[in-house]
Amino acid sequence: MSEDQTTHPFILIIEDDAGVARFVKRALQTEGYIVDVAPDGETGLAKTFQNFPDLIILDWMLPGIDGLEVCRRIRTRDQKIPILMLTAKDSVPDRVLGLDSGADDYLVKPFSMDELLARVRVLLRRRRAQVPPKPKEYRFADLVLDTGTRQARRGDRVIELTTKEYQLLETFMRHPRQVLTRDQLYDQVWGYDFGRESNVLDVYVRYLRRKLEANGEPRLLHTVRGVGYVLREPSE
Image (cartoon, rainbow, N blue to C red; front, side, top):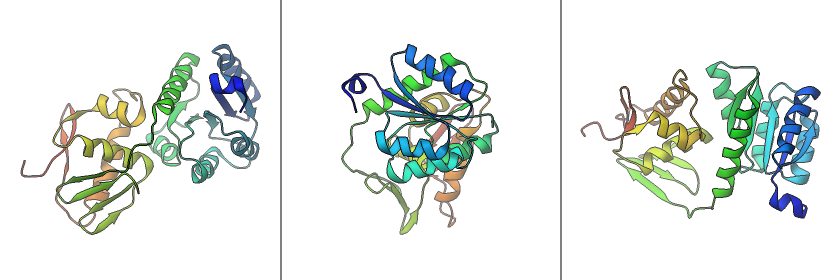
């Protein structure tokens, strides 16, 4: 990485639409970022592992290897590079699929350049703020979350979690018995609010409950109608 790149974040755009790539690249360069472009997934992966950018803007619909697979392959080697996925797919299942593949954020085309730049700033700010914490074990009732292995246990049963499920559960485990609003959860887990009409949070809470209660265990994650959710024992 050059001296300029140590002071100006390096962003890789993986986008097959030359017009979109040119538009985004010009806007990012105007903001002072160092920018490179890859027109397909293969080239994007090669440039990622050669240069390890500070952030990746990744199109879902790429020729050859699509954006989901690119995201998954990056995550097998690097868990820290922020990935902002661009796509015309705007249904909740598609958003969940994109986030589960390892993306940190999701922006639907057509998008506002101001919004894209805002999300880039948020992702880079979160990356700079990341200081590897010492592994910690959170316990609540019969639920245990190990931040070193990123693994949860309910009694003796191991619970495998996706990245977002883990982040959501960790947020609850750090604030037991505290009612967390939807805005707080969106901010802590996704870094921004999807909007009042979105049910992305509800979808992930539902996924998490299924895993936590897979063997019929008592519910620990409760809905507070009109507000958010709380981690507490049924008797509380």
